[in-house]
Amino acid sequence: MRYASRNTDYLPKAFYNIKADLPSPPKPPLHPGTKEPIKPEDLEVIFPKGFIRQEGVTAREVPIPGPVLEAYSVFRPTPLVEATALRKHLDTPARIFYKYEGVGPVGSHKTNTAIMQAYLAAEEGVTTLATETGAGQWGSALAYAGSRFGIETKVFMVRSSFRQKPGRRVLIEMFGGTVLESPSPTTEAGRKFFEKDPEHPGSLGIAISEAVELTVKNPGIKYALGSVLDSVLMHQTVIGLEAEKQMEEMGAVPDTVIGCVGGGSNFAGLAFPFVRHNLGGSRRTRFIAVEPDACPSLTRGELRYDFGDSVGMTPLLYMHTLGMEFVPPPLHAGGLRYHGMAPLVSHLTAMGIVEPRAIDQKTVFDAAVLFMKTEGILPAPESSHAIAVAIDEALKAKAEGKERVILFNLSGHGFLDISAYNGKAGSF
Image 1: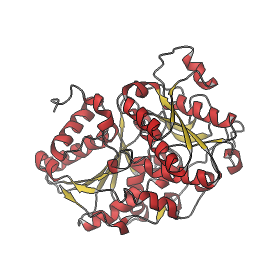
Image 2 (image 1 turned 60 degrees about the vertical axis):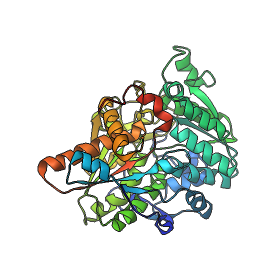
Image 3 (image 1 turned 120 degrees about the horizontal axis):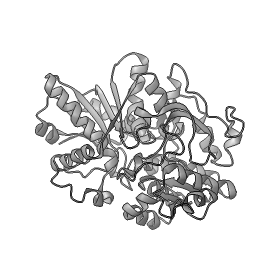
Image 4 (image 1 turned 180 degrees about the horizontal axis):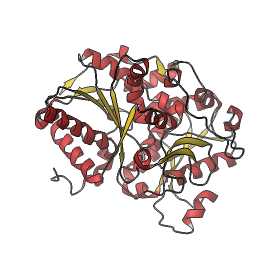
């Protein structure tokens, strides 16, 4: 392994807003009732006002508040590592780099936006944030951020992950959060599914419906979302902004950037600061967004307006979607089970800048085990989708005899997903 330095100067002082550089904007969110472009005031029943303002920001750089920078400095900048052992094992001319977000307080990239959202809520006097979580990375990140800024968190966790990944539930509760299996009998949205099947595996769409309903019915509660929305993706650009400086230190410029995608936040966080060079015409970097073939919104979904939840309470978003009713199988990569894709990632895919790719779960776990054996890090199942494609691209470079520079986002560690690896240690 070769590491870039974790120079504190590499921590950016502002987020990068890709909307400032797009030749044309994505289609706007629509009001769920009127189907007209939604107004900021329409969102105030759901989100803190500070968050709403960030959704509409058009500036290229958005300053990061001092208390947020202080919270980031506990674990940022995160490591950029050259995977020399993996390269040697593959016998490839490609150089492989990864940005490791697993060093954060809860082991994933989700803390980046959780801290910012909790700060904005606290500044407004919000005392409780409601949310959903798939595999639990987002729920635990928001619970951590809430504990730091004095905010209570209520988390609806997709039932299949609640049972597959008890460690995440424990982590949320350790930070003072409350966790409910979703679908639950505590909301009207949840009861529609729970009463038909108390063992319903759940989906992120259903969990979102429950969290939004709780918010709408309780004026003291606001909602926080861990992916999909423009400002959430913007908060994650600290990853790519750091990576760009660290790659320069390592004397390399990536020609291929890879990330796993569920809602799109970790991919966007790494990729968007590099995408701006393509938009400006100075580079022709490839960007590969990897999703599970069991939930293939980018590769087999439709690009159209759809609700972000399963009941129809949220604004309509123009995105690649499998449909609000889609219930994915309980695959281990619980963070990648969302029916839709971030509008900005969908927009870049439609422009031909982002290449979507779907892969199967066995390929993912084979790649994860190989990565652990060579690089010594157990990756999250979600992140392992990016690893699998990075390996594939490195092997293509070997077959073609070409030198390549590949960068991917290792968006989280897999220590709390260890049960998913049971029986897979010898599979590669």
